[in-house]
Image (cartoon, rainbow, N blue to C red):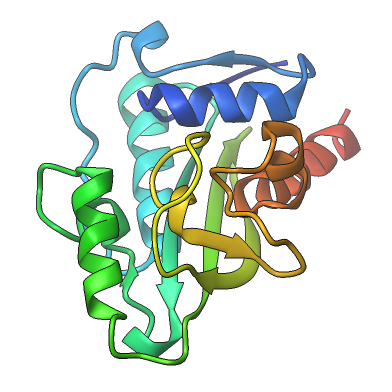
Length: 192
């Protein structure tokens, strides 16, 4: 089976390819000639995943899936949430985002948070949503050099390391994107 993954984020593409383990031929936006930035104007994580999937299906005619991910911090009323990538500005700089988050939490005792990924799949004229959530907490400082985004400041429940310190295989198994992607794989396998 061939599916477009509506992303040009090389880190996300590598992570998804690793999770899929060759079970699906994955095409990126670049592979189908889509070079524009797909608007992410929804006010929910689900909404942005749907917008991106629909954009590819409507403009390029491909079956595809798109994801959107947000880090939701309890003490910040769910922020940065849908604005996680742009939390510190449109430049989408991970270090700036993490620094702003750590500053916002500097006087807070409650550091509980969760990562949430929603995948919207457009397949054969139908749309399906898959959600993966991993709970954890925001650390006091950045540690680790694996992963991307907020991984150096997010420590999943029952682990002493941040996502950026864990091996990719572990992160993919317990992480939000891995959970949502596994639901996607299970669904695709059930339709064969």
